[in-house]
Image 1 (tube, rainbow, N blue to C red):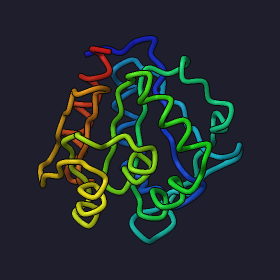
Image 2: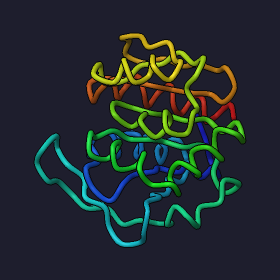
Image 3: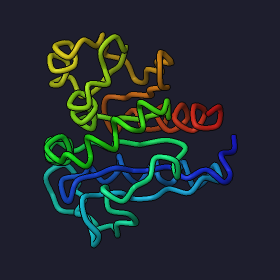
Length: 182
């Protein structure tokens, strides 16, 4: 599979990102020929975690309020409880997600990354998965939640979702396949 020449936005909060849910999809995009770009509320670095322990920091490429939807072929929303919770409270992040979904761009979301999709009112009528503790949030927002390794829902914008780090091989495979078709 190749996504050569396609930029892929990875949207994260300033801290609390589950590192493997950022780095493995990032590498999958690169391996397929795409160019991942890290987007966050402000320039500088973001702090990733291995569950509750601090891990690496990553440099932000573009602040959210300067991210142009037309520059990106797809959006990835990594997990991490604190990441997902903070992201949904940032209006510029919600606006970017809304613009991406309104434009019909593919979205990949894993674990707790989906809270911003709920805030952007982008899950009603969609079938998806997440970390199990979020199932009520998704159902209350009008989504059909299922406990599966990976779900691809093509109603409206293509949506690839997974539950947890163990699902990353399937998530990365489906994410790249969906971006390739876009």
